[in-house]
Amino acid sequence: MNIHEYQAKTLLAQFGVPVPRGLLAETPAEARQAALQIPGPVWVVKAQIHAGGRGKGGGVVVCKSPDEVEAAAQRIIGMQLVTHQTGPQGKKVHKAWVEQGTNIARELYLAVVLDRGAQCLTVMASPDGGMDIEEVAAKTPERIFTTRLDGGHRIWPFQARALLFGCGLTPAQVNAGTALLQNLVRLAAEKDAVLVEINPLAVTVEGELMALDGKMDFDESALKRHPDIAALEDPEECDPLERKARELGVNYVRLSGYVGTMVNGAGLAMATMDAIKQAGAEPANFLDAGGGANEQMVAAGFEVMLSDPNVRGILINIFGGILRCDIVAQGVVNAARKVDLKLPLVVRLEGTNVEEGRRILRESGLNFETAASMSEAAHKIAALTAGGAA
Ligand code: ADP
Ligand code: MG
Image 1: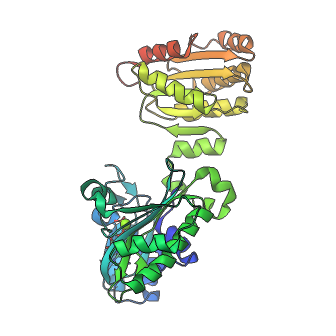
Image 2: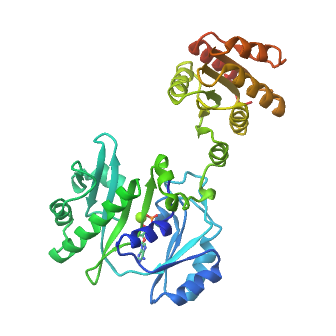
């Protein structure tokens, strides 16, 4: 789960990482008030969206007076901000963060990321911050230093010092940077973050270190342990279908294809998506109805899947274990009736109460095809959805 820069900066400050003074504004008038409360002579107005590259896209504006701050907020709040991370449609800006302008001497890059391959946190640092780190990685990878924290969720001072001297900091800055890095790692470990990124970490003209940007991503499976982090979710940033699915308790991930799928069990759902691809079609979603799903949840999943306008046909692949086939069948029938389903439907049912499930489907009057295997089901739905939009 991603959070906004202003939320990340609040967390950074809580963990002892220096950040500029700032205030949140939802209107230009609030932005002006913020500027009056924050010492000048320079302020920066920053669009709050879940995407990087805001600076280049016009979402970060340096201002020299409260009037300019108000005018910048007027432009930014409500704009559709396009950056290289938002896609061409951009993202609507609802809030702006007004902060004190920093006199920047140099910009560094710092991040703590979960390295899934190495199964530990890894710290990355580069003297070339401020720009896309992907570009540095592509062109001058030797200028990104990494240290795996495979001795536990902590960074030893010698590890931090090696990274920071590599970034060309003075001994006094390395000392401050070591404490900063230790705090950053503590934040990542305590809050179950998979990414904590500061780009840029400014070295100010006065020689201080200051986090000018903050990007954080948290492990969604760990959010139960962190109600404070879970509360930072911004519903306006989520895919509306994924949000609806979560409210209904269904595991749903939207994809870019056109075959809607409903499967029980994450492994079978992944295999089903593979089968659809092998049959030459593209899955529109991952949907795991779960082992303990009831009729209402199956119907809810169906509803979510059908709310995606790209869906041209549906494949239901259920291997009835704890989730019984008759329950799935009843859920499907209810949902299909409710939405007056016109799209092609292929159903593969096996397992507990399969006969009863098949009977319910047969007697429902629904127009659907059955398949004896996953591969057959995938080929059938691929054929039924081939050629053009619904
Ligand atoms: P993004 O990464 O989305 O482009 P940043 O927060 O990194 O947004 O801002 C882009 C650039 O704007 C930074 O690299 C920095 O040069 C400048 N900037 C950001 N915040 C400040 C600030 N408080 N004072 C001075 N310059 C800033
Ligand atoms: Mg940045």
